[in-house]
Length: 128
Image (cartoon, rainbow, N blue to C red; front, side):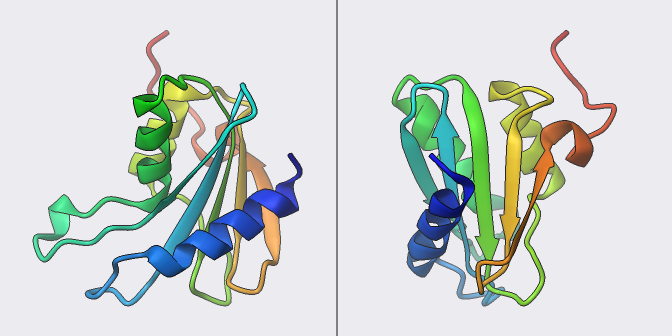
């Protein structure tokens, strides 16, 4: 699956975001090694610590279906600038990816930039 298709999926699912507090909707599309795609949105909570990011929603959906290897993640936020995963999401993606996992970061217009997870999370805390 190409990067643009993953971005389109992230942009499309973003409409399901539950973001009444930040008013910042985020969508994610995650590609596993098996070729399956899982999507996710940010789900906010009045107790902000209980909020879940779009990327982690997609990861948790994939893991709950037995998918334990991430190939790429596209993330798209509701802004003019590209949206990058937060630190917690980067660490969760690393748990099921590796340093070469593609992180495709887009803005609301579909402009994007591709990073490796190692670029976004240098000197990561790993299980190795």
